[in-house]
Each structure stands twice: as C-alpha cells, then as structure tokens.
Length: 234
Length: 402
Image 1: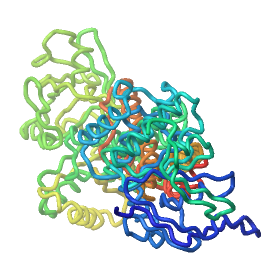
Image 2: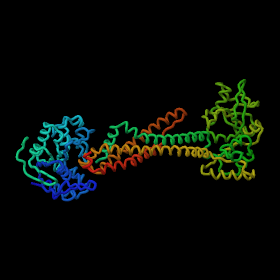
Image 3: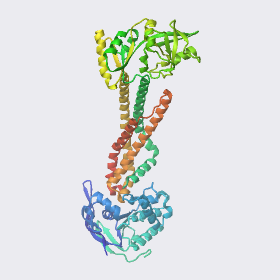
Image 4: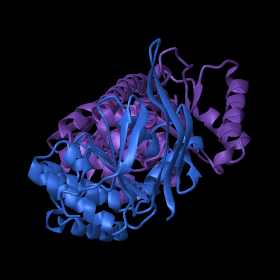
C-alpha cells in the first residue's frame, strides 16, 4: 500500500516568553492510503500540534513530515498553502465555516484559491453537498443549520478538493451523540470509499470507530495499534 | 484566486456593514466632492467668461488700447480712460499705417445719451461712436436695417443703430428702423436694430447704441478716443503687434500715458483668482482625504481583527498570503472608490443645482473626475496596505484559534 503520511522524529517546541514548552518530543509513524487513524491522548499531549504539522499549518522545530513523498517541513509559506489547497482537507471541532456565506459557498471556498470557472466550482460543490446529504440546504447559511449539518458542510468542504488525506480535529467535540454517530458514519463510509483519514479525539468510543489508534502522552507516542472493535457500522 | 472572485467578496464585506462603510467613506466623499466642485466651477466660470468675450467678438486675437496709464488697481486705468484719454484719431491713423498685420483697428468714443422718441425717454451710458470696422468685434451685429458705413463717418451723418433694450423702451412693439429719435436733443435716424445679446460682465449690451465716430466727436464735443480694439490677422502675431503699437504710441506721446491689454488678460486674471481658490479648497480637501484615509485604515484594522477566524479558515483551505493581502486591500480600495464615486455624483448634483440658479450649464469637468477617481484609488491603497499586510501575515494556527 502506498504511503500518504510519514512523520519522522518530529519535534515542536513553543517558546512562551523565556520558557520553552515542548509539545512534541520526537514522534515517528507512517499512515498508508485508505487508513483511518485516530490520535488520542490527554489534553496537552500534543495532538493538535501534530495535526497542525501534518496539515502544513505550522513548521516543526525539527524532524520531518512527508506528504505523498514530499518533505513539507522544508517548504515556504506559499508552498505550504499550495499543499493545503491541493492535498489536505480539514474538519474542525468548531466547524470553522464562514457565517456570512451559504453552505455551497463554504464548500467552494478551497476551490476559489485554485483556478476553476465559477460554474465548475458550483458543480463540484453541489456534488460534495449531495455526498453528505445536504444538497437541499445549499443556499442556507451556517447559522440556519444544525450542528450536525454544519459539520457535514465542513466535511463536504474538506472533500471538494479530492484531498490525499482528511485531518479531523475533534470533529464530534461540539455535537450531541446522535449527530456524532451520523458524522462518524459518514467518515467510515468515506474511508470505505478509499479516503485516508486521521482523526484527533479524546473520546474513546469515537476512537473505536477507527481502524488504528495512536495514543500520545507528553509529546511522545505511547502506543500505536489496530482498533479491535468498531461500535458503529464496521 | 481570480480578481472576478475577489471583487464581489470585497463588496459583500462592505454591504454587510453599510452604516459603517458609509461613515468610513465620509472623508473621501467630502474630499472628492470639494475638489471636483471647485475645479468644475472654476472651469465653468472660465468657459462662461471666455464665451462672453468671444461672443463679443473680442477674442484672443484682439488688443485693447486705452488712453490712460496702467494703474495699480486692476481695471482702474481702463476706467480713467473713459473720462480723459490721451489717444486721438491721429494716433489711430498712425497705428493703422505703421503696424502691419492688423486686420482692423476699431476706435470708440463712448458717452452717455438721453434717448427720446415721442414722449418716451431712456438714458443709456453706452453710446459708441465707432466705424464700420466694429463688425470685426461683433459678428452679425445687426438684426434689422444696416450698420454704420464709411460714408456715414465721412459725412458725419446723424444715424444710429440701437440695441434691443433701447428699442423696447422707446418703441415697444412698433418698428424702429427709419424712425427719428433724439439723442441729447440732437435728431438721429435709426438705421439699424442690434440683435439680442446676452449681458457681458454684468453690462446689458442691449442698451448699446452705435453712431458714426465723427458724429460722436460732435455730439460729445471731444476728440479723445477712449477705447480702441486692434484685431490681428494671425493669432500668433498678437505679441508682436502689441509691441509695435506700443512703439508707435510712445513715439507720438513721448511717455507711456496709455495701456494695451490683451483679451486673454481677463482669462489670466480669472485663472489667478481660481488658482488661489483651488489651492485653498485643495488644502481642505487634502486634509479631508487624509482624515478619510486614516478612517479607512482604522476601520480596516478593526475589520482584520474581527475577521481573524475567517483569515484562519481561508488560510487553512489554501489561501496564500497574497490572496489574503489582495482581499483586504481590495476591500479598502472599494470603500475609498465608492466614497469617490459618491463624491463625484454628489458634486454633479450640486453643480447642477448651482447651475440652475446662475443659469449656467455646470457639469463636473472630466479632468476633475479623473483626479477625484485617482485620488480615491490612491487613498484606498495607502489606507489598505498596512491592514492587509497584517491580515496576510497572520499565523494560520493562531488565526484559527481566533
């Protein structure tokens, strides 16, 4: 199986005033295509930092991140933006939709930084909304949507660029249990269709929906093993 | 990112907060309004005066000769020549003979006359004693009848061409040409009726009456010629002709007890006055634009701060620094340009209303509109660069945290 992500001796230290705060202290692992990985661990263990580094939002202090064989740790800001625009689909805990834009406009957002015609963008956006079952809500703005619906819009936005990997940071953290199940079912379905997913969560039963779990503690990998049981779907 | 996608984005940001946008634009609106209104009114005034002068036939090709020295006070020398003039018919003959390149030399003896027809009387202080060459100054001057001929001058005929106002006052709706009237008690025959003329510099030209210059010498008992217009054949010879006329008169008078004016002097004086007004208003406008620019920068900084999460989201989906920079810069420019356009429209409206009152077609001058547009573009760019840079340089992780 082809490798999508490779993390090598990854370290990240935040400098807060005169104090150095180590967030990641040498992490290495690989994620292959069509994997569904959950990253768990207590707060402050470096889950989000790891996500930001894999997601090309931040530069590591040392070590490397490879995305589709490209060492992204050496790229400049513009090149990272290009990678984010072409290869990475983010799904956030707080949805991070633009409130003044309709659902379809939110889904099209990554595409406007490419070079597509507006008609093509709308076509692709509608396809993705259809995929998450929200075609009928395309014209609604986020404040008019329920939490679950907003997260589905966010997933459609992540999918619209056909990314190499979806990075989901606590995607169910702000949702009730019913919506959480719906969202997890969508992720599992996407994974069955071949989408590679890395998901940060602190909820055990959410992690159980994935196929592999990496457990972090104090900026290090404590365990990295396959998930035995899938509660939903699988 | 395509500009066709960025522009609607910038405009929608303005629409989302219309009151704030309008208030922010105010400085630019006032600044652009002031510049365009002042410049356009100045140009309107100049065109008006130019039209007046040229309609009177005294264009850039004409020189005015007055028999009184230049005075410190503008125009006072001209006024002095009306009461006591050093120029005589002999001087005029000398100018005609010795200055080549002149199309016509038109002398005028001016005086006041009490006009009487039957029981009706009317006082006009615009009785011109002149020659047939007067037609070089005013084209198609006669609406009815004829103008003064060389024979009228040679034979000192008591004939008069009267203006529309005089005709209305004396004859009402009855025909005037061929009738006998009295000027200062002397009987004249009306040979022509002047065409309707607009007032010139506040003087109603329709009160004018023209009589042969020789007859005027008798009527006013003077040989002093108050005003003479020399018309050159080629426009480029005006300055040369001025020098030659000056030399002829100096030779004859021995001193500069006269003055020669160009018709364009008047335009130059208006230019000077407008120049002063324009600089003062421009200074006020500049301050207004500066305040406007600071206002836009301020509101853009607020906008950047308010929209940090949006910037984070955009960056996370792949917006480059340049994309964010362009988005916020374009927003600042849109505010400023919209202010500029409102200022231009407001100015057009005010000019239209003023024009209605003073009966003059005033429109924003193209030059002023271009200046207003460019200035507001410039203000927008200046005000937008710093906030846009702040937005573009935000760290995506920090921005996503909000």
